[in-house]
Figure 1 (cartoon, rainbow, N blue to C red):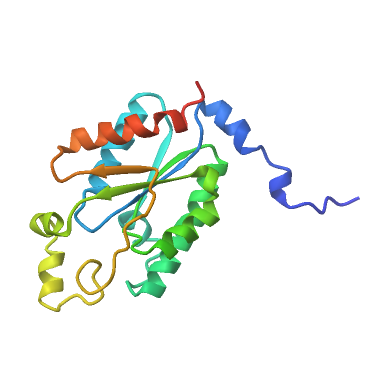
Figure 2 (cartoon, rainbow, N blue to C red):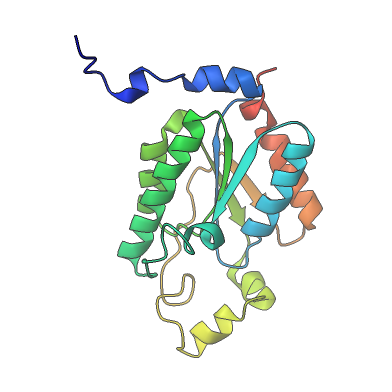
Length: 198
């Protein structure tokens, strides 16, 4: 008789793969304003975790908007679809036992709740990279705030598009008075028990 169950019922489980990799698969969802330090902290956290034997994948705008999401703009509707696709990809990584560090502005509570619902609350850790707008704007490494203030970029988060701060993030990192190293160590200390099998 033909097996009518979905393929997921016939594949190795997330638990099987977690035991093989000796880690718990989680999505660390970094949210915060542009220039808050999300990507820099994510990149350095990836290196720190990898050096300690964890298998990690970073997802951010650079490696998703140049590929699977390259047809999307920055309207709230497109941002929602961007995050929906990223969450679905993250779910596949989770099923493979992999720790995902996702660095996205994801500006509204609705957008982040959508990601959490798709990924599953048990696998989702919200990390708020909390940096004041004036600090992000002073950094402005890509010149985006300057362009937004000049009206050259429309719908820029924090200028003419809203950013809704997380109300109860599992992890909050205050970067304004911290070095990158301090921020990375702060995240690592706060998430290590969530990703370790020991």
